[in-house]
Amino acid sequence: MTIATIEADVRKRVADSNIDPLVDHDAMRDILDDAVNSFELSALAGNASLETDLAELRKHLHDSVVGFGVLQPYLDDPSIEEIWINGPDAVFVARSGVSELTTTLISDQQIKDLVERMLRLAGRRLDLSEPFVDARLPGGERLHVVISPITDGPWAVNIRKFVARAGRIADLVRAGSLTPQAARFLAASVRAGLNILIAGRTQAGKTTMIRALAGEIPSGERIVTCEEVFELGLSNRDCVAMQCRQASLEGTGEVGLRRLVKESLRMRPDRIIVGEVREAEAFDMLVALNSGLPGMSSIHANSAREAINKLCTLPLLAAENVSSAFVTPTVAATAGVVVYLTLDASGRRRVGEIAAATGRIEDGVVELAPIFTREGDTLRCHGPGSLSTEPFERAGIDIVAELMD
Image (tube, rainbow, N blue to C red):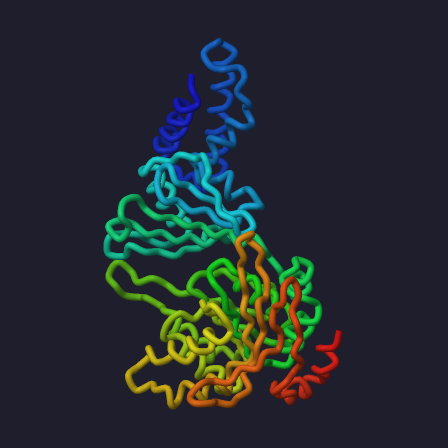
């Protein structure tokens, strides 16, 4: 008796029993126990290897039938932060921001079976009419899948694990992402109710930074988060999290990020957090922030300046009658603090610069004042400069003292 034989037998017993291995845990445990016992008896009779570790065999069977097969060890490994599949012989993982090709081999059919199992757990679907899907797995991981003919060949699968769970700014200081001085400034900005925009490339740590900043929000405030897929997982006491929804097979029932931002304003928020702005939802977010409601969001950009420029452009996608004459002054008045994050070749995630919108516009460009800029392994403080101290004073914060070493 081989492991492949016993695995096939387990799958047959599951099918014959008409049970759902993802739900019927007791029945699945009994089947696995019987399978391992049968293998042990077969080994004692000389029909299977006595060197097989029965505990490892049971885990293999569980991972193959209930878990996520050959990917399960990577999901269980706390040092791995992302897994992606480019093809049967191209399974990659990332540790501390650095990618590596694994020795794992997986067939096209196994990829499809695993994806279908993951989507079933997440309540999402994937078909030719909707070849892209984002989903959240039970362990909190984010799944993204693209199928052919959009991809040139095998399905492309990405699983982001969000290993870093910084809950406060102090956690990022200990990780070396920013200095204590910069941390004091950001924490004070949050308590003072300034809007904060987190910028950076993919995997630079934008979600982690938002989570850490949210940990500085006063406990009495009500937070509403809007995300494409649940990622933030805030632990704040009064927090409502909302995510987008795909359309049904009939093409109805879709809930986009713009709708979530609009609905969040009807939920008595003290602060809103938009996981990431990519398109026209930037307009709805600006409208919300322009009403005096503080918030946070992230955006893909290569500097604080580019983040502001992009925030001035994306709202124009909302409608033909939305013009720069409205958007640019609104960004200048509401942008608040911009935190730009970097990811270097060694995988280190650090704050590259912190800037603040002064509220002024020069030749159609929103003016930014540098507060911190990176110089080697440290962040140089430029002082509050043109930053308005009024919000800090209302919160009882002496921002000049906070910026002192």
